[in-house]
Length: 86
Image (cartoon, one colour):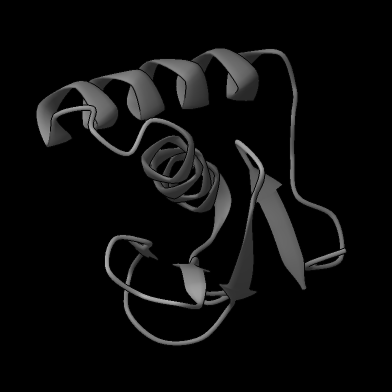
């Protein structure tokens, strides 16, 4: 699977570490959000790594705060993951 942020295509890997966005100094940009994460944690990590991809110079503390707040907001609205990665 892949996704585009600000015109740059990112390969999305659903295995491995808890979450990571690799884009600076590499030819192949990548976002890692493992399928092993469940529920709100999966949603928050996905938002966190997508935020890094879009706002690559945003400080880590702001990315974390944004992802946590948006994740909780979407969770309260009823957003849930169904059937894995589309």
